[in-house]
Length: 336
Image (cartoon, rainbow, N blue to C red; front, top):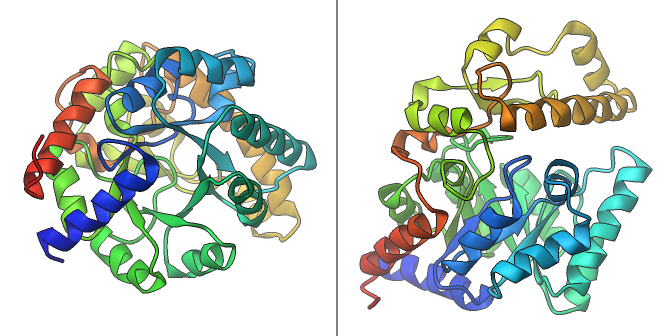
């Protein structure tokens, strides 16, 4: 991949989204508070709203929460739809959230954990676009069949539900689909950002770096842990959702272990049982992550990816966006 072709892909994404830099502030449960989402967008990236975090963690009625963000920035923002239908109630709630987001003018949606056709239909009807989280070519094929506009390639360096493939392997698997591909995982600084784009990605979705910011409402202990951690401190635990999640290996993780119990594994193997188990995990993990967000001691789960290797301080989100954005512009020979 040449610098010129990498620059073309990223410039096309910037133009499509109406932003300054090819940078997506990844939606994080529970860390995506309104001030953080707004700061990423205001600085020239695009912040993505995580609706469950906005309502259940940060206490906003959904529409008023979106308007809170709008009071802080008029730049584009996105919406994250986790669309696995673990229950009819959850699907109805997500459908309503999506409809409100579109009514409030959001035109960029990131989907994950399900079949995005119904989201694509709604978003395309108002002229918006949908990018879908994928971890390999098999899931990408299903997303393309559903009509998505782009792919978020979640690699093995990501926080949250990480993939199994490296950024290089994943890019190779997704090139044949002919859609814009945004890399997610392992970017914590300018060097990693430029490297991701030079691999051919149209942009980068960044989460962990924005935990260690002044706008993020995470506890100081959580932020310090992100700054202090190295790659070797990131481990995968099954005890949050039943699917491996990247977390910091703190005292709590070492005490509780990282493997799901035998009953949980049996439930997750069943075609029908797995939905009940995932619903239970969703409730339990929501409570645990919410507690961990505010915990000043290492007694909860702190999600983070291997990008911690590039994170050395707590800074304003806008400064980070502009630093990475200007590094991208220099790499493609574009004036500031």
